[in-house]
Amino acid sequence: MLAEKVLELKKLKNAVILAHNYQLPEVKAVADFIGDSLNLSMEAAKTRADIIVFAGVLFMAETAAILNPDKKVLIPDPGAGCSLASSVDVEAVKQWREKHPNGVVVAYINTYADVKALADYVCTSANCLKIVEAIPRDRPVLFLPDKYLGMYIAARTGREIDIWEGECHVHAKITYPRILAKVMLYRDAEVLVHPECGCGTACLVELPKLGVQPRFLSTEGMVRYVKTSPAKRFIIATEVGIIDRLEKEAPGKEYIPAAEDAVCEYMKLTTLEKIYISLRDEVYRVTVPPEVAEKARRAIERMLEYA
Ligand code: 13P
Ligand code: SF4
Image 1 (cartoon, helix red, strand yellow):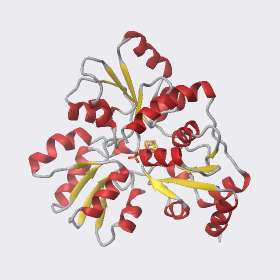
Image 2 (cartoon, helix red, strand yellow; image 1 turned 120 degrees about the vertical axis):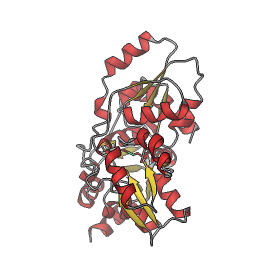
Image 3 (cartoon, protein in one colour; image 1 turned 135 degrees about the horizontal axis):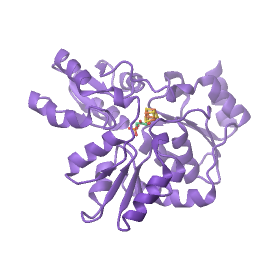
Image 4 (cartoon, protein in one colour; image 1 turned 60 degrees about the vertical axis):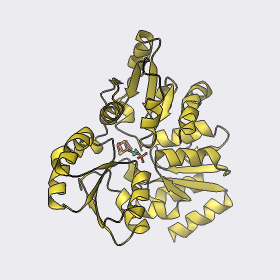
């Protein structure tokens, strides 16, 4: 069986498989660690393995490579991109920096290494509020690249922020009218929203008026939350790949996707077969030029301090 071969190879080569929550169930089944972007970075920072196979997308594997310059970081499909990460224009970020000598650039982890190298802080959905709140109020902030997450941070912190106009095409589909329709249908459900969603700020402002208190969580935050909540039903506003993990780790509850079509085709490029080939042939190696990695590492390490 392919899964067994993967496990054998992993042992033989002292490799570790890190998988994002949106990965296919058969991929998560062979992973040593499953998590959100923050947990995966933390895991990548402390692994003792010689090879890291990253079952996720390219910016995540790049982050692992930046944190482990001496290890072999592999991505099973080098086409696993990210619409959000691709939306950034490096020159425009440099221009903002020149215009705001006192400014602070906060880059969401969904960015490529050249953008992280221009940032003061990297953040994930799990620690973005903490990081922005810690920046002195008199310093201008540029948040990039996700406009919905940026708007959510501005609303929660009450702070004026320059926000990049990017979006994740998957989370952008999760609009307020769509989530509202589910809320009306399942009045007893708790509403868990990833702050990358198009409905983020509308949920924050409008749902409490209907007596619904949405929870804004990273994917791992959702896993933790459903385990402790007494609720039996949840509306899940994020990529649908998280749902099999919720069902596995907190069974006996009902998980209703806010949008059934919220599927990231980049995340689904990784299959068990590609993981096997990746381990067997040690492909495709992800590397970051040392001068870029050094600058990006500083911003990532600052993020890890807020983990
Ligand atoms: P988290 O898993 O960190 O919440 O991020 C979601 C995401 O879109 C990753 O691409
Ligand atoms: Fe990028 Fe969106 Fe896919 Fe996450 S879900 S990897 S943000 S395209």
